[in-house]
Image (cartoon, rainbow, N blue to C red; front, side, top):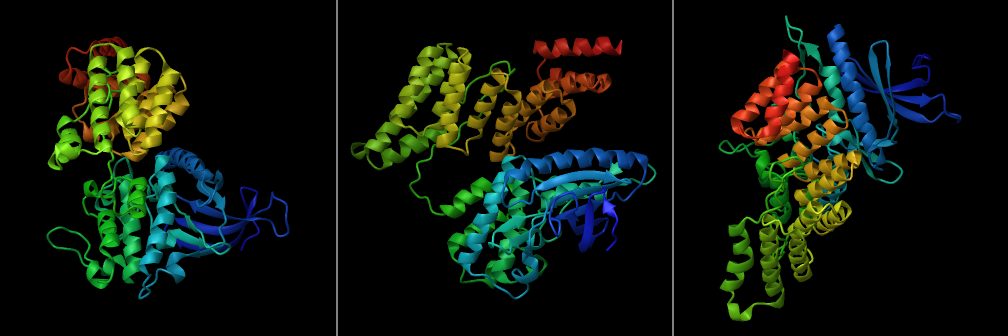
Length: 518
């Protein structure tokens, strides 16, 4: 290879792979001591167009995605991003070098079938990595055997080649226009249908991992497996009839064609594969969310009464009221105090509400909604540290309860800990990618941090599930106002007022926008 140093520092030793407009090299870092110098991986990215507008957009994307990858440096099974640099309109990522082979080379190959036990261990290991990735609000977008490396030193699997950076190399210009065009990121066969449409979600990664596990279990490449004509689901079970129903059920849920029927995120899938049978689990159903900072009512978590009555009342009654167990009785008491606390909040009696919620968690300590609403009541009294403590209790007993993470974020916001509030909201979204209040609150705190463009991206996620949510339209109006895009801001404020004509903050904001336009 050439002795020329990339960025005056990295000497290329060998080319690992070349795909389109991306080249990956093994290099040595000449600025570090050693003989030979320590190795690293250098990935060169080059947009498919050298138009100024494309390069400018690629540069912005490159810096943004590098920041995302730096966030993942804390995980021991993700290669660390060491540097990112631009040289002669070419972009380079420098990452930690992992000595080993990817799974497509020797392990997940045609005809080689893994045991069920091995597939389970594989899923748990990769889901643990993915859980960390999703908690950082990152979607990998290209999980497949060749992007999973088994380190030679200890056999641990590393997740590599995050698909987000491929947006840069796939960018081109639409013909005859000045618009940047990107194509869907991912690999056919492993890519979920919503990702093919350009709308990847956290559970798009779950789909790709499930397909990879099915490939390992059956010995067939995904393209070789037929699909059901009516449902579009992958038909794989016939190739491994000996597979247990337990594992088959988990894999089927991972690769559902409809993302709404899949696991929502890696943590949910991980919990299921570790505890696949949980009959008798008395987990309290998640109630509706509490309103975010700045909403007109800011009401606490409410109980969806019918489902809870079925869970706490109808089922025990069918077993016979005379034979109620102490555990069921205490849960009934907890529910009574919980509803009492909600009524007291609505009456504005917050101290009494806190006492009611205390009684609820005394009877049932794992009652996450009661902990959350206790925090809400404490916040109404200005006790923001106590609020945060209660919401931490909620996430401790139920880390899959997005409202509890949202509650923590609201407490951080009230304490003016905006960066930490952002982390809490990201966690709520990682638990439930469609949790619109988490997205709305994330947008609000990004505005507070002076990041209106990022706030717009977050707030638009709200409209995907709640297109008639007036607060999202108002928040977009505010962000556009701060970007001095007054005409667009006006349109968004007007849309909000169509949905909620009597909301005075929107009217006030619209007046400010119109003054700028005049």
